Amino acid sequence: MIDTFISLVNPEREIQPFVVNLTGINSNMLKNAPKFYEVAKRIVEITEDCIIVAHNAQFDYRILRTEFKRLGFGFKRKTLCTVELSKQLIPGQLSYSLGKLTRALGIPVSDRHRANGDAIATVKLFKMLLSKDLDKQIIKDNVKTEIVTRLKDNHRTIIDALPSITGVYYIHDENGDIIYIGKSKNIKHRINQHFTNNSTKSKKLQLLAKSVTYEATGNELVALLKESEEIKRNKPLYNRALKRTMFTHALYSFKDKNGYINLKIDITSSNEKPITTFSNMQSAKSFMFKIVEKHELCQKLTGLYPTRTNCFNYTIKSCFGACIKKEPAADYNKRVEDLIAQNSYENKNMVIIDQGRDLDEKSVIYIENGVFKGLGFYNLNHQINNIEVLESIITPMENNRDTQHIIQSYLRRHKKVKTISI
Image 1: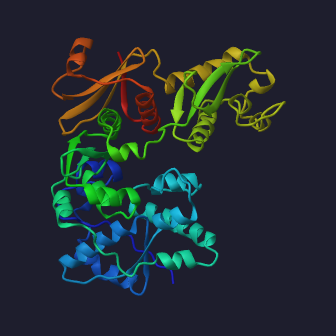
Image 2 (image 1 turned 180 degrees about the horizontal axis):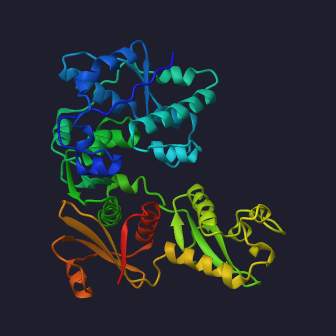
Image 3 (image 1 turned 180 degrees about the vertical axis):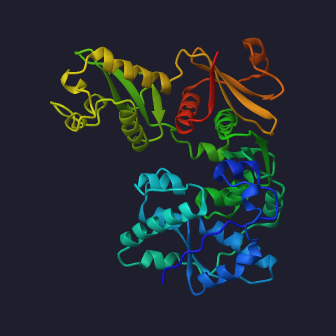
């Protein structure tokens, strides 16, 4: 039997700002929602004699058990984690987060970061995993009768003291030395994952971790930039052990013999200056397909349709014929130049404005002549109206290829972030 139960739950407390930004759910939306005890019976009924399948099941199951424990009910179910299954049945993925994994596998996700959308995506992922495990032995071996809480007392104390905010966190050993630096939209949640995960890295961190400090950043872009700089400055043991290139592919342009600006995706090269960079080939190609449609570009001249004649889009009348020199090069190049200008901040003077650490604060990232100069925070009562004021609130930071990739990638993914030319 297939049944569906979807409900918001009133947590009986204010919703943290990062949760509002992540899910779109605010406290007003939850005023008339049922409290957990009002839906608890339904949860018991629909999970009776069932296996709870979830992406990072350990976390979701722990939340359910905690809430039922407050009601005096011993909630016990078998669980199956699609993260663990994916690592065994689909090895070699760059990331096993639900969003990145489903994108890599071509699984559509709607209502991202809402329970229903994530649940449907997990179902589709689980069906794919079922089809790959022909004997179903791997899946049987991964069913857990009960996930035992592995939190040590000192780890629990550390987690309880941490806030659910966006920022950079530092894990220290008994000597106070930093052994790992990370960033998260929810520091408490992320450290909880570190202290309960069964991965090799997490087990090493659990063994050595004695304290965690953090710095609030207000938004993910500042967190990414600070994380990158802090890792380079401190060179923590377990960041070095897991060092990998943040970006592997880049978008380049060149003019062909007919005067048309061509675009190409290639492996990142230190000898060429890219328009923008990507974490992997798949995200690069996804970007290319979108910009071809948005800017009405030619598939042939963007490397998406190798051919000696016209591209497929010309056949269906959605390309103006640059592939066969029918469209004037000047007209075509104008659209390509617009695309390049939108996705590169080379030679630009601009600031990126985003949310700050408090409600009355904003963050500002300063780029001068295409060079990242640093970042800072300012109160909404003040205006950034000239370079002198701007420079006075900026903390200088190093400009490098990592920071360029972080900023470009973030702006590409967050179209609504405010940018101001200066």
